[in-house]
Length: 255
Length: 230
Image (cartoon, rainbow over all chains, first blue to last red; front, side, top):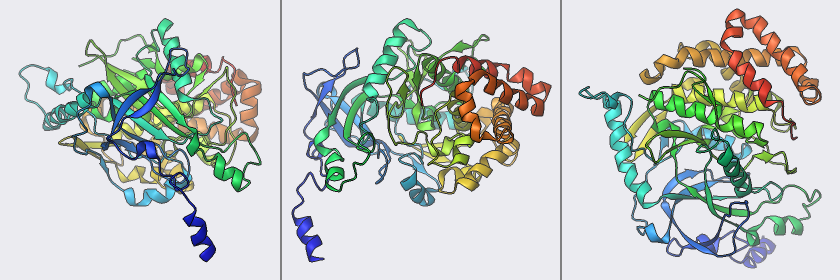
């Protein structure tokens, strides 16, 4: 016990996993812009983040532990004066155990995002609006304010370093989209990114001699900033159906 | 209402796949949408953490896929089984996402939403793969029967149920073909392996499947033309 206490005493901020760059939302995080060819620029850009504007959270000890929060570049920040909005999903209690084996992936959809376009039923002029459509429209309006203030998202996660970097693959998809109109518009944009290697799990793995297979296993802290989009379940039936098939394979695949 | 065109326009995941980008993690959270400058809703496939690109080989120990929407074949194999990512795994995941997405009820409260799902989906989110697998396999029958589909998805529910039934039959064909060796066969002789599987599905589901799923079949065959990455 005494040895453990003495050992713990030697831990600094970094060993405790305290990430100083994310400790205070008052200071923008210095990230690098993603260039068209999928590499990172060298000129740092400050991105403000807003922890109270939580988009997705998948905290867990294993896996990538992805968290997504609202973000903005300095010019359109509103100092984060947005109240938290999130999904309450049913049946959470049984999900934690599963999450430990399933990375961050036993997910309950979470969002506080909205859409500004009308629903199917709302489009017919003079029609009486369905209460569900009314509620959806009110929700979209409420969320539009949040999205206008924080038009980006910051994704914080711990991917394996052996994997291809997400921004590289998205940049390639964007390049394909330039000549392939069926890809254009259907992939996100990664605007800024940075790996914080000093938080890599490599150090503790080396120390504990867990690096038998050097190729895999090591994770690093990765921050990625993307444009803010909206979840499919915000849409009414017909729009959702179309958007789903656009993501998958073919628009108009099954009508 | 936005209407679909009668001619399918290939897009999204499938186009990326045939161009060498393999997503490998299809889940509800990864399907999002954008509103274009002209006000059009555009589906966007997000989250390329687990994606691979055939030009760059990577090694990793991250399992690919989101458990609730994972293909039956991958679930049955357990998470430790090293199975190469095949197009059909992602395509099947899309159908499980669709089943879930069209069955949930979304309540809007201020700028939050509350999502409730029929209890038939509970096991998808729990740590018992056996029950999870079973609950997916009965969905071909129970979808829209054991629970009600929200009104705004009514027009599509028979299509969704047929798609679910298709993948269950696909999985049956895999099991019957002693699937242990099949993944290897699919890599060595992708067209032959797929033809045999699809043939078995069509035999079980009959003429209806042949007609209704000609498009699914065309997608599967086109997608496997490109070489695979393990």
